[in-house]
Amino acid sequence: MSRNEDLFCRAQRTIPGGVNSPVRAFRSVGGTPRFIARAEGARVWDADGKAYIDYVGSWGPAITGHAHPEIVKAVQEAATRGLSFGAPSEAEVEMAELLCARMPSLEMVRLVSSGTEATMSAIRLARGFTGRDAIVKFEGCYHGHADSLLVKAGSGALTFGHPSSGGVPADFARHTVVLDYNDCQGLEDLFVARGDQIAAVIVEPIAGNMNLIMPRPEFLAALRRLCSRYGAVLIFDEVMTGFRVGPQGVQGLLGVEPDLTTLGKVIGGGMPVGAFGGRRDIMAQIAPLGPVYQAGTLSGSPVAVAAGLASLRLVAAPRFYDQLAARTRQLVEGLIGAAVEAGVTFSAQSVGGMFGLYFSEHCPGTYEEVMATDRGAFNRFFHGLLDSGHFFAPSAFEAGFVSAAHGEAEIAQTIAAAKAYFAAPRD
Ligand SMILES: *Cc1c(COP(=O)(O)O)cnc(C)c1O
Image 1 (cartoon, rainbow, N blue to C red):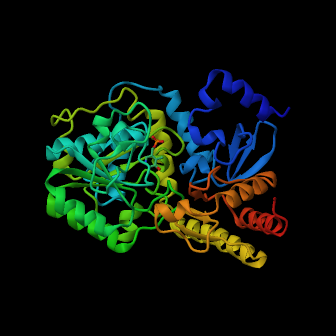
Image 2: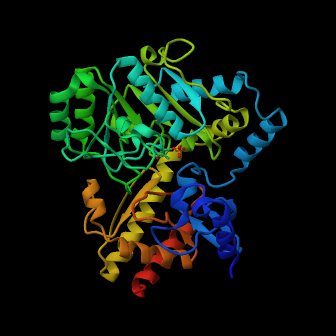
Image 3: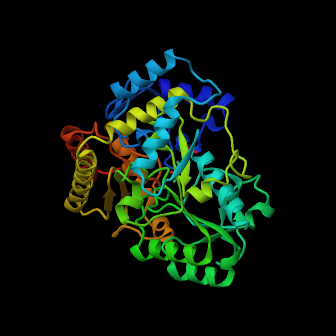
């Protein structure tokens, strides 16, 4: 038995499913999850010592490559000064200033320890600010695992949502309306019918949790226009896209300003940091300034913030995003070329350091279209490439990530492996 198999057996005895976050269990693609022993640059090594070029990047945070020496050093130095104080520290102020300076829609920001905490807090804040209960989300967008957000569409588009997880009271879910991503008419109809009840619309402005789906320009414009007209808070969940698609997230890339933004992943540089922020008048409703309660024992942890600050300094290097985007495009174009050569039905796209691969003729634009892609073909591709030392996200419905540590050589090796796979695919 391999070490991976052995660990997976052992893990399942004491950890539900053997993992601490479900997608890691490989249920979607089948097979044994790789237990990672270490990671450096563009690579991870599993418990059997096998190396993989990594396109998961810890699901986004590892944008400068794994274990970047400057981030590791910042963590080590911060740790020697104490792990946690339960009192404010200067690094948190620096982090808040840096986030507000980089993202123009942030006037004030609060740090938390995960993306889930950020979205959960932003929703509560929007409800407190507007005095309204209803929130709107879109099918296929993921915003962490808070009760109000684990909701799927009801029978009609304008009806109440239903829980998409056990343990979420139907009474909570009915305050969440779920619409189709990129559906401007559905959005317009909802606001006309119930605009005065809607506290917030939360959206991934580029969706990265149903594979990668680009927004239609008129979709984000409609969101902005309708939220402003009806007094609803527009929340951009940029936990994944923030500092990933470009230096100012999707809002900078596509020029649409939300009222609140949620951040995570890259801003922690691999450590647990999340944030939510935005308009000063809204943020002023948070305790201790206002009545909306939000807190955290380890929020703004000095060690985590040190990693985040180091990471944010690294991505501010000149041309960082140009180079990252070019490298990512190179991967995507190479994979498309390999598929075309072999006559495989395949499409792909990228934005910044994020990409989507689809076993379908065209890049999907809706949740329905993503669901219609050939997941069997993806699963076989996944395992083919895993065997040859390439770690893609273990699901057809996740985006992929390239880091600044991925060089020409890593991209070329991956494209060559894809060519070899497409020439002799698995049954
Ligand atoms: C990852 C993610 C979250 C949740 O963040 P966690 O740190 O896993 O809680 C929320 N929203 C989006 C868009 C994400 O990609």
